[in-house]
Amino acid sequence: MVNKRQELLKDLIEKLSRAIHAIHSEQCFSFGNNTLRKQEIMILFFIYENKGVSSVKDLANFLHVTSGAITQFTDGLVEKKIVQREENSEDRRSINIKLTAGSEKMIVDFRKKYIESASKSFDFFSDSELEKFIKLIEKIKTNNC
Picture 1 (cartoon, rainbow, N blue to C red):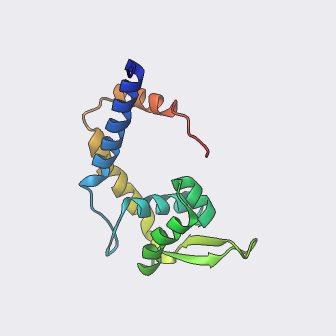
Picture 2: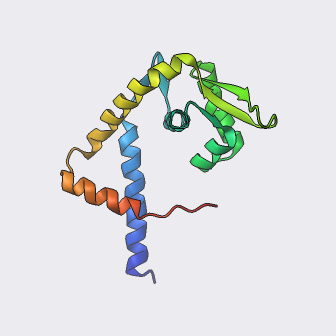
Picture 3: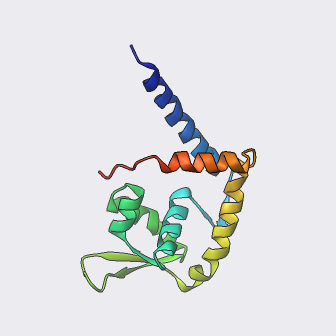
């Protein structure tokens, strides 16, 4: 027999997953002439927040995926000339992913539009509800596997 807490946690996880999906599902995010997927957006934001460059390993840790998955995600961004790969000057076995000069200029505006669009999902929350929700989410501990 499943206890009440397990049922509540199952319900919470399912609803969080649906909410995250809903925030992105009806959104079409254009970056210049390109449409970006959720993973590509997360990669761009992570690189941007890390001064325009990030190692494949750091990206993989951030997204909780393998380095191979990061290579697949970034292949499309490289083809679209949004990022470029470069050898890490400190460790030649390591590859860095870097914003191109053109994408560096575009990302600030893109990020602003992305947040405005995604924020619409929270229009029905009052400011005090948002503050409470943020505090509750901050209590979630991440697992470092």
